[in-house]
Image (tube, rainbow, N blue to C red):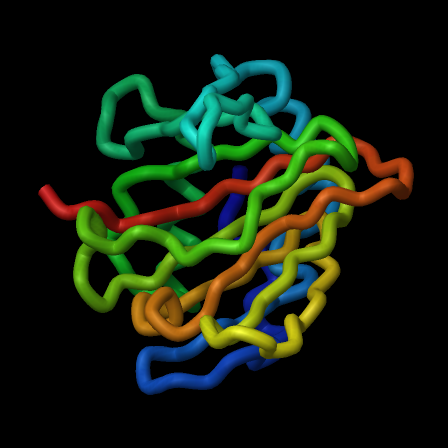
Length: 193
């Protein structure tokens, strides 16, 4: 994968502003052909797994498949390492891990949340690359009754969330009754240690 071909010149849309860069969105960060090829590679080549976790009084299935790639391992995907290097041009950090989520259809989702920061490098952003079918992301202030911003995450798009935004905003991918094709999100994070 040639990261030099990534179109960094279109500039981001500023969704949330803060002192660390806020939440920014590049609708076409990666060339569509590259995005399609990477989607198929990850869909077919990653060891996806399902999880169960406690919620309220019961154990439930996590409504998506998941995987994690440690970028510093010898067996890590070279394509993901190259992408991490390209992402540093717009969101500087030493990305060490990629959290992957596979949304198989509209029933797969992630509830509104903020990322846990205790294992992340202080001040480092989180960068989310979207592949496959478009899906909506909701972003809202962490206050009761605030209106959510709805952003259609396009294939090959990049959303960068500052470390600080995890303390002020939450985000999620809602379920949808519309027929939607599969989507993969690649969340690049800089972990401590």
